[in-house]
Amino acid sequence: MSRTQIPGPEILGPQALDAARRCGVDVEALAGDGAHRSPVNGASLGGVRWNDVAEIDAVVTRSHEAFLEWRRTPAPARGAVVKRLGELLTEHKADLGTLVSLEVGKITSEALGEVQEMIDICDFAVGLSRQLYGRTSVSERPGHRLMETWHPLGVVGVISAFNFPAAVWSWNTAIALVCGDTVIWKPSEQAPLTAWASAALLDRALREAGVPPAISQVVVGGPEIGEALVDHPRVALMSATGSTRMGRAVGPRVANRFGRSLLELGGNNAAIVTPSADLDLTLRGIVFSAAGTAGQRCTTMRRVIAHRSVADQLTERLAEAYGRLPIGDPTADGTLVGPLIGEPAYTAMSAAIETATSDGGTLVAGGSRVLAEAASDAYYVEPAIVSMKGQTDIVRSETFAPLLYVLPYDDFDEAIALNNDVPQGLSSSVFTRDQAEAELFVSDEGSDCGIVNVNIGTSGAEIGGAFGGEKETGGGRESGSDAWRAYMRRATNTINYSGELPLAQGVDFTV
Ligand code: UN1
Figure 1 (cartoon, rainbow, N blue to C red):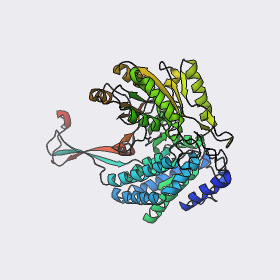
Figure 2 (cartoon, rainbow, N blue to C red):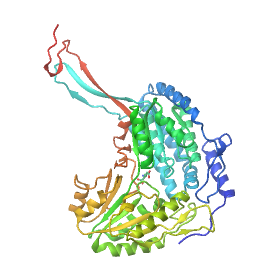
Figure 3 (cartoon, protein in one colour):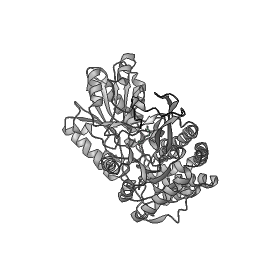
Figure 4 (cartoon, rainbow, N blue to C red):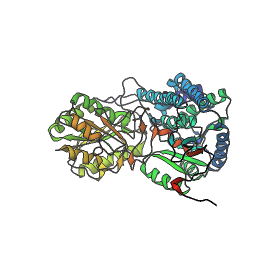
């Protein structure tokens, strides 16, 4: 089901600029030649100014100078700035939501959900600012004590992708700021206004607190900007979200200069559907995770591994539900599936469907482009389902589009093996009412992913947990739990109050 009306550039351009202005962006000063199109109608939103790679060294130097001051600010006072950011995000939730919808095509509810994630991580970080705990331990020597202390790390570089154009920055920034670090953000070129608007709100919070604004900086541009950050010796931690290909370039380069990296790369997330699963709930869980965000989350469900006894019925019901998905203008009431980010995503999806069907798969739903007459440069597509006999190479690779493969299994161990037999390791789910299956799935012998869910889809994680995954997903953890440790350095302190100097391990070194 697709809607027919897509708003033109005369509507979306001014709407985007107005929302950015309300957040405090000087849009006139940031106008330029950088291409900037909305996936909603495929038309330009007005050009933007890109940073020159030659500016990066000065940006990093400013950030480092600001760091030297910021690290002296007590952590709870740093938390107060993040608290203010959370208030400003709440005040401008609708504006940022509009920018997210117009720049990357998210439906309103998901765009607002993204801003809510930003508000939530601010709340989390404010609490954290009084809980940067180190442990104390006992010493083997009399009159000694061991303790560990956590210290700010320095400049944190953040590279974020188009699909979460602001929330990923906020997970990194809210935590980095309370940890005493400064942040340089290279957002997706697709979403500069969302980035500038988010950063303008933080600027306001920083100015109100009277701390150096260079604590947070934004640099917009192509991959060479990211590379300059990656290679800069003063960038202590590089947090990068994007494709596995990008991570393969970033990880070794940062490691080569002994910097730290935090990588959030591709996913190929599966749900196992067992014979005891509640099929109504399962269906809703799958449709949101597989077709939501037009299949463009790193947590998007890309595979369903269904027990042979339920596979046909489930596939039929999924195909029927897919037929009812409202596709179209993401800002219109009732739309559930917005556009793909651009033509390459559509081409990749079509090619993957072709490969899958030539591997013996059957296209059971969707796959066609829609609304091409209403907006010829926008790429709306019907979310697709392909029923597969086995896990071929195409199923094992991530296609960043709403394309779901359904595979049958006969016994549960085989289902777990299929879940794990992909290069990526981000998110996974099991739908079951059998407690033993659920426990096995979350056990050492179960899913090998960073996110392992029971009776809930693969996407839509809350900020309170550590977010990230294993294998080609990169191993990084962001957001909640103790992910903050990646943003600090740990020192182990041995304190001697004995007046003697006994050496550890019984070593005698008397002169
Ligand atoms: C991403 O797709 O890069 O769990 C992040 C989720 C969201 C975050 C996704 N909270 O789907």
